Amino acid sequence: QLLTVPMVPEGTEYQAQCVFRKDFHHLLQPFFESDEAKNFQRKVEEKISREVLGKVFDMWFEDQLMPLTRTLTAEFYKGPAVSQMVAEVPAKYAEVLRLLREAEQSGKWPACSKGREKVIKLSSEGTHGSFTVGSMPASMEAPNGTKLFPELAMRCFELERELKPGRCSSTIAINKRAQFLPHIDSGAGAGQGISLIVGLGDYSGGELCVEDEVHDIRYKPLEFNGWTQRHWTKPFDGDRFSLVWFTPAGCENSPGLEMMQGLMKAQGSSASSRSLSLRNGLQLPRLGMGTWQLSDKEGSSSCEGAVHAALEAGCRLFDTASIYKNEAAVGRALQTWTGEGVYVTSKCSPYEMGYEKAQEACR
Image (cartoon, one colour):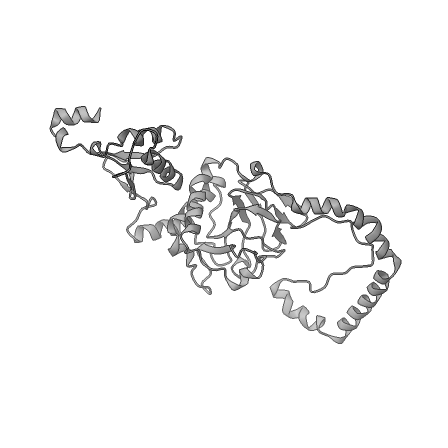
């Protein structure tokens, strides 16, 4: 967590080990390792030591920092308000957020690349992660995330077109609980065009800093130049996901959405791989929940509770039957659901066979 403290006295600090762009680093490194540079650094350190050992630093410590101790301590231990972390998810983001959480729970979230790991602050819980989907330059390996989570990749590229109709990025960085350190993009990001970033999930904090400007990106897309502008993530609490759309040099003619559509088609799938197209045009979910042996007894309905939990988990198809004696419980659970696209299948019992009896049972 970062806390604001009074500025230290002039002449008592300096910055070392600056990071320069990759294409300049090999030219500057010999200079930094030269005797002239080392002698200059030693003189600077000696001057700062004299300043720090003098009274000016002690006065700053006693007169400015110490009086703020109680305030800084309270700020450090102050937890975020729940209302700040949990907010209604805009409709356009709901499906992508569901797929992100599903990917996290699958246990298949890929490990960070070595290059990206260097610019992410280590998490005490070890739960951060970042991977890529879409296209990569010919000199780099195709991202594994595209094959692991094709539907997530498809929905993310579709989301970009919805947010910014004029954009057609080739690549997306998908991050979870990743607090990025100050950096400019390199590797696949070298030479890229303008990036687009957005944050999703239940969290507080986590603003994006671009040079000297701070931006709230939670469901607020922001374009910036990650290749030339230094950027980083402010500390946050909660479950924070972020998506970064960009196009590396060499991938300008490989728009990600079209690539994913072609991949889906080649696999004999459709954009809606979670559903089947019926002849009447309806999209029936491939996976549903059965309710056999879920009771609907007075005062305790395990069926109703199970249907509620399944709806929250993303299930949209439920199977029941008159012989299960729980059709009413399924109906009560669905009446409280405000979403759309829910399907129910039911069956007639042997005692309800025949045209008229079947019609009566369906009523």
